[in-house]
Length: 452
Image (cartoon, rainbow, N blue to C red; front, side):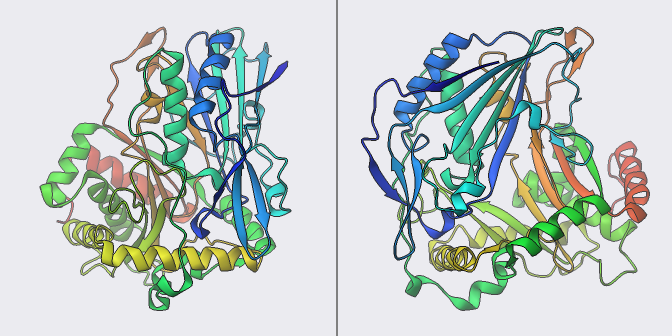
């Protein structure tokens, strides 16, 4: 075991303070990820690339700071990043297969991750690093495992990925991708919020006391089983064609298909469980620079509840309803008060020591998609189509979507289907077999018998 505190190659933060918006104040949440490489990552080269990355991203090496009056900051104090190296001589090889989303009931990633102690942020600690790295060498297989832990207060998954992509590119002596990171963000005022929008923000408006939500969260995972469904790029193109073609996205079609399967084969005669709406996590960067420019490093996501589906047993009806709800957020006139309302609710949650509610809510599913981001490719450190990506947790009817991992068959790497997708969620045991049987039948029939 070895440990270092990696400093920026040149200090650029200079103790500047960036005030956080309410949207950024998910203090105890963190993003933990694993990347598996088939051969060595050079430690000295890695530390040098990390040092240069930190100079471009002084926000990441800052510290969380709370001041009087409900103001929260990241102080860019040019601290170092904890980086740990360990060797594992027990494992024959990396123990997990190709499923991206890891079932936390069956397997823990903790041995490979040096987790950020986010609970300290609730105590207004300004000593805890907000990002940590751990590199593990599995000696027998010569696989190298990179574990990353990112405090959500630094930003959402898109921010995390941009930082890691910069690190990967600098390691390969490549220039970082544009645009450069932007750390200053808009601070929303109470008068910009619209209370009438609160019912659409179910995760926030249904927040509960912290301890209660933790207990509910843990009990829900134990009573439901996780599914990891894999779709090829050809299957996704077929579903999009059936769901509405160019009028919907692949993600719209994929979400709609899974909802249709559940409604048709699992919940058709159960009004309490029939799915009538989606609650979709939406990245709102780039709609307007006044709201969130493309390069913004923050939590630039909202969760939007759709209208009821006109026909919950029709693929096209479900897909068009989802697309219609998302298109609302591309209008700055709708988005601005919606974001301001989210901001206000998040501040209230923190002030009242509550935790957001990850559902599920009656007759809803939650869709949190990373389909637009190829994590395994963007953080491959030069091991093109040989890096595998893993992330823990999904919940009841909480659809997490990612690109497929590369597949290794013996000593051979198969050609990668870069546009395929994995969908992971937890499902009640009493309907699991019905669902899987219907899905497998549709795959064999190339979806020819689903109701459009």
